[in-house]
Image 1: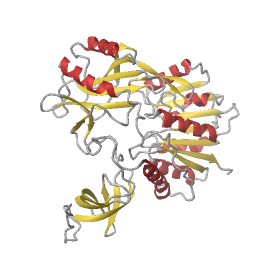
Image 2 (image 1 turned 30 degrees about the vertical axis):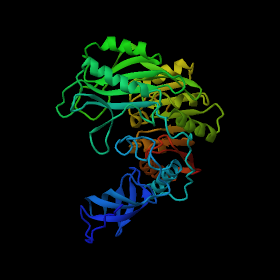
Image 3 (image 1 turned 135 degrees about the vertical axis):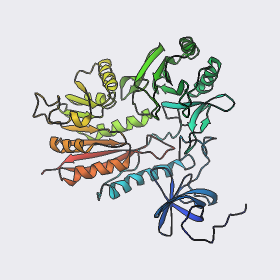
Image 4 (image 1 turned 120 degrees about the horizontal axis):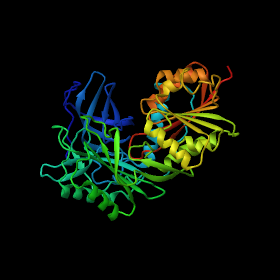
Length: 470
């Protein structure tokens, strides 16, 4: 193989070709190299690669590059288990051996805590993993497009584009969902349903959603459409129920807006049930079409087990579960303490949390709908009649943007004995921990990363904090 030679021109400019050693992996999934004291981000690389790169976007102190040639492959490289891994945007790290993925993810947390949080001497444990790096996803939501030849395509977008990579199977999702992909495409084709086109903002069917109960095997199918005006929709939904014994319901989520958001506000059940049943931490949960539930059931149980082991329960505690969702952690927590108060912005999730509590005969839970920052405020209905309420534990599980500053200020005012912060983004975790610890009210015991998203750059982390003596 002939090697393209780097340009003799050493200017830092677009189009320049340079030889680069990959030294790190960014939280975006890109490899990181350095050239003339500047950082270069290069997708599809591994630590230890030496690559020939063309600079495709150049800024004064950093650039993005595209691999022209792999000069010396890293020992951490492997053959991707998916045949379209080099095109599909669903995963970033299938070319990296799984042990090296875990090391890189821990390093993400370590670097964020030091650089963003400004915190020193924090214990970050090795990453917890189920050991299963494929077949773990219990939920997938696929865009639907019609090809130039008018064929229905379902899959993920190609990296950095809105060009669809057509799939009939996906190695990271539960393989019980694979049989649906090819058949649903054929049925949409046969029904001649009008597929949505984002450029013209015309058409109806936008996404195909599939969710499976890992412990029960039940499957819920959801079409995202601009309306339910699809010819033969009810007949087709009933046909799917007959064809797939594990399918318990067919729903349509209505999203008529010109938006990148997948789901709209309203979901209608067309046939069967509007939910599936799943088992988690010894409890039963009903999961609706749009309900948030961790995509890796077994790894989410590792999170709960770690929390359960860390905290000393006496059964008399009051706990607040902020960003409580459908009660994923609230309900296991309710079996350990006297009282659990769940806070969640989405009213549908609050309704499902209450239903899940009833399903498990748990009577010591309360769920409130609203913004967490408002519900933790001094004028919140939680504190009306109980102005002296002091939770023993606050469990935080915020979205990727982390906690609003007013939430952190409320926590400093409440001064619970313990805080457990479950985060899906190390950068915002580090920022928030820095705020909680800079006051001296709280100190970090340890941080435990957990890999919920093998083959991607994402990492979950649990931070355990205790109130200091001051």
